[in-house]
Length: 435
Image 1 (cartoon, rainbow, N blue to C red):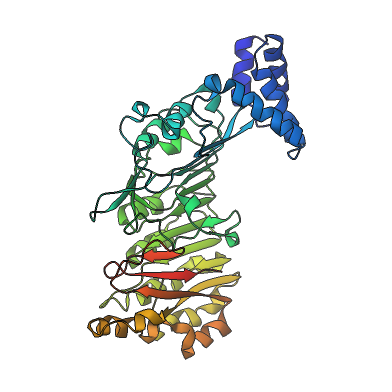
Image 2 (image 1 turned 90 degrees about the vertical axis):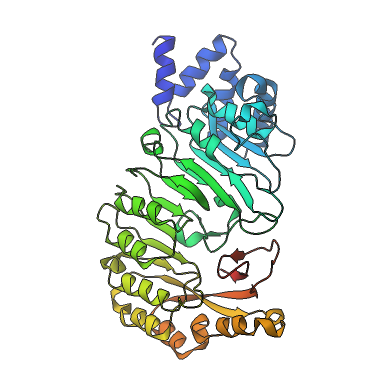
C-alpha cells in the first residue's frame, strides 16, 4: 500500500480499525511524532484509565501543539480536546459569559488571539478530519440595557466549509443546561435559558443548511437557544436526537418537513399549536420515543393556548409510541388537562410524563400593591394543577412526575440564578425544579 493509499485508508476507516496501527508504524519509521500519537491513542483505547499513558499523551501533544493544534493549550481551559487514532476526536469550546469577542463568533476571528481563534484554525486543520463530537458555548456580551448576545455564525461558516464524515454529535450551548437521563444520552432541558448580565441572551447561529450533506453520520444535534438560524432542507438519515430551543415557526416547520427516519428523541420549544400539529403529523420523521414540547407560560388572554396544544397532542397517533413526554412550562385549564386524562389509555408505552405546577415565591406575594393584578393572575388555578382535583386525576391516569416552578419575579430583573427562565410578560422569571 502506497503512502497516499494509506492516508486515504485512515480517513475512511471506522474508529479503531487495525489500519491505524499500520499507519502509526509507518509514521514512526519516518520519525514522525504522529506515530507515537497513534500508539498512545490505541493504548488508551484498550485501557482508558492508564494514567501513565494519559500523561505521556498530554506531554506529546504539548510538545507538538504548534504543528497539530496551535493555540489549543490555553491556560483557562476554554478549549479542550480529546484524541483517537492519531486525530482529534472531541472538541469542547466553553466561552465564558461576558468574555467579549475572543475570536469565536466575530467576522474575522483570525484577527484575535485566544481560544476562539485557535478553534477556528483547528477546524480547518488536517488533524481535525475525524472529529466525532463538537460542543460549543458562545461567549456572551452585553451593551448597557440594550440586550445580551452570543454569536456562532463565523464558526458555523467555517464548519460547513468542509466535510465531516465522522461527526456524530454537535451541540450549540447545550452544555449550559441541565440534562435528563430519561432521554438516553442526557438531552438538554429546554425549560432553562442561558443568561447574560441582564436577561436571557440572543444567540445567533447562522446558516446550517449545508450541514446535512457535510455530516451524514450526525446522530445528535442540540441547538439549545438559537436565533437567526437557517436549517434549510433537513435531511439527516442517522439523526437520533434533535433538540431545538427556539419556538420559531419557520424552523419548526423545516424540522416537520425534514427526513429524519431514525429519530428517537425530539425536544423543541413551542408557542403555537399549529407548529405542534405539523411536527406530530409529519410522516418523514421517525417513530420517536421521547418527546419534549417545552412551552412558554401563557400571559393574560392566552389561558387556553395550553388547552389547544393538548388537543393537538391527544389527537395525534404519535401517543402510542411515546415512552417519555415532557410538557415542562405548559399550563392549561381543567378542561384542557381533562383531555389528557381521557386519552391516557392511548399512551400505552408511556413511562414518564413531566408536568409543571406553579407557585409564587413568598417575596413576590408580598410585593407592592401596584403588582396586585399580576400576582392575582399567576395565582390562578391553571398555574398549579397539582393542587387541584385535576392533578389527582392526572396522577391516577398517567405516570406523572411533577416539576415545581417558583415564580421569583413578575416585573423585575431577577439576576443570574440557576434554573431561571425569563420570557413571559416583561422581564419576569421563574425557577423550576426539574429533579
